[in-house]
Length: 630
Image (cartoon, rainbow, N blue to C red; front, side, top):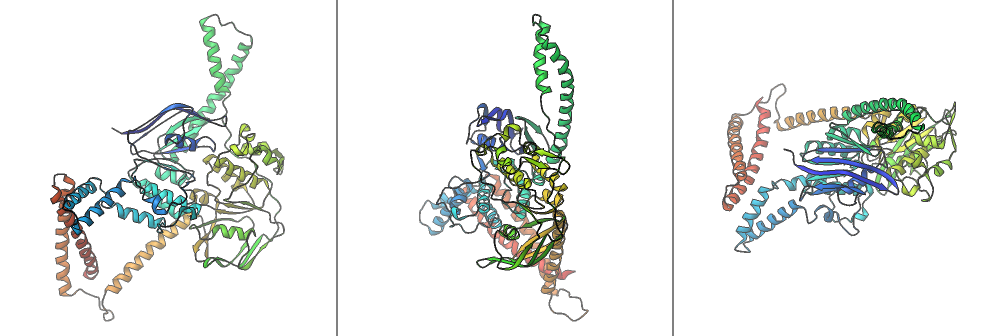
């Protein structure tokens, strides 16, 4: 029977007089991996804060398993000033760290013979390590920290970049001894390589997970259940993202049919109500009550999901943008070196590369926000940039959303017709209520969405989008994709969202580091296939090189054969490895049996360490000799 970790019943929350969700129900059992999906401003982060005890609902009840350890990755992690990387990673309440420290201290005391009771302390520490399966924990930590490039433990957290802080917070979560991981947009600020590693790690690990993310490939690979908040209500889909998309479409089709039927019946019932029936009989009262239920359904709005318009683009001349021998470095780090490119009309370029490889610097050079060290950027006379940056927009807090947009344009030219600023906002998910909200009351995702709308409103013919998918909901991403597919101008996208890149980019600039930029024809899926092929070929070449280097010089056309002595050694190694593996299995069974005395357990664990090293050496030698046996 599944162990219940968390149950939330009838949760409701309002923020700044805006209802976020009502009567929301969630249950999460041990081993489940659940994603929360909703439009920006629907209360996803507020819900996570409530479930993690950092906020309280207006109403409802939460029941959490006793002593449940929850690790919460916030969307924008904040750390106390003065802390080091080591302080954050190896905090005092991590059970594994406590066990390892206790074992190391007891072992040092035992070997130094400091205290007559040191043997007993060591035995206790060994039993505790064995019981918690903590022997391999340090290796796991080292692997994660090396991947996250967190090796300077003394570095102060306030000196880290936004991306480094996200990595630090995520690494701290992953090495923590938690029963439940709660992750709010874990892929933000990570490069694609890191996202793919995290995706693989979370999908393979036996852990319990509640997350919010807009990354559709990530959702598909990791989650087994989707909870959607839509119009303040929640819907549960027991499957991954692909399953959710299908079932959501079915649900909306059924709701649309129900609403249409209710509208037809509502007109008849409304006419009856206007004749002011006297609710004297039980039948009349029931009909009146039924009318109000029907009215709720008839007035329910199913928002149109398809974006069926395109902003008129500024005229674009022959000469668009030319880059000549462009180079840029900061200190001794080369970001771009001697890059040449002539942009053509209608090009759709995706930019990928590790964090810090120079992607944003490249965009700032193109838009002439910064100057190159050498080379030049020649912008065509008719080229008008629309630049969506990671920094976002700065607006007066007391301005309303609609006022901000109207400062740019009251009406938007669609070519054949015009629409109002309010209609344009509505198409990107800004309800009429939200349009009259103050900027200060918008969520982080809503502010990013407004920044996007403002960028598109400026009538550009060359769009540059730097991480546009961060903090945007899936609904807005779908609308943005539809918009960009119809966009006739040039498009450059820097994004870690693989789905987004695959749908929109027809070739890529790959930032490989040390100033090298490779132009790759194809989308990200094509690039990954090429990478996998190249990796496979490299491994074959390495194997061939090792075989060749392990083979002594020989006469031409004379196949290398193992000597008699090497054959004897090879046969002996096979027998020794089989014997050692059998002994290793027996030692593992003994350590896991729970019946050994502390003295015997200490003896067995020591032998296990020696045997593992010996087995590794013999296996390596066996591999060398096996190349000569063919």
